[in-house]
Image (cartoon, rainbow, N blue to C red; front, side, top):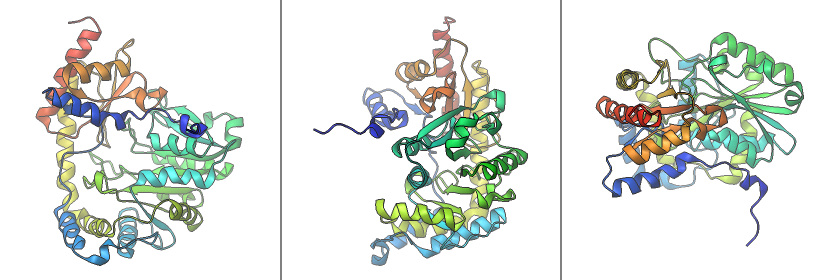
Length: 393
């Protein structure tokens, strides 16, 4: 058979892709599995979205190709939501493109701009789609370690001049996965100015904009002056509406950025299921009445998870956004070993920090996606494993 391409072999392992099979094996042995790995809540989607999907699926027109245009009503609903939520107006036909989940759009964008010799700056740890798109385009990733030293921010002034000169894309994601960090507006303003100065496209992943707590409101990058000249922002219905499997997202920005992404997509997909897009419209329409109750559930789960892991000796910060705890491990305890032992010995699945990049070593991610009772039980089991690994049990 032919040899694999260098682009393919450069891809790192994707731990989350392997977990479902391991989970099945554990459950087949009778293990009580508590899965806190993926950011995939066990909560229902808005009832109006479910009803809209059921109704649209009965319409033969909804089973036809959507092509790149998709359902115009979805484009219009996304544009209306952007204006209502952020005060930013986008033309739904030329400045917005529907995506089969924001992940595919983020990965495909690299094919527009990157080629061998180019650089993309990627937060480390970070969402692996940034790295995957960069490697599949043949470009070079510059992994910037986001750590407590910088409050988990990418400090652009620290990028070496020779790297900056070859950089075309900068990926940012706030509220952040996996660290749950948020970015001050003055920081975002500095990044926008830096990208303008150096002719770099800012790829702003805002998938968690609505997953916020304690009065914090996440901004759009377009609320920063000058961002439309240098940024493309990605959004998703996955986290906001408990619709991860529905794969509904979009990108917004100037036509000069949106158009090329739409063109690449025209060669690799033929649009999303139109009935799902109709359901997405209903989800947008449910935002004001439905979101507060859903956030209250996540806030209760966050508080329960923080309390439970603290009780077991883990030093946990209270996140202001996202659905994650980013939990430090004691010195000498490897994140992959902790993940493996916790899964195999206690049936609890968390995500090793190293699985999201070398910069994540020394941490693990907890998704507070299940009930407070199950989160408490998971923390007790995690505490037992940590005590075994540190010789305290």
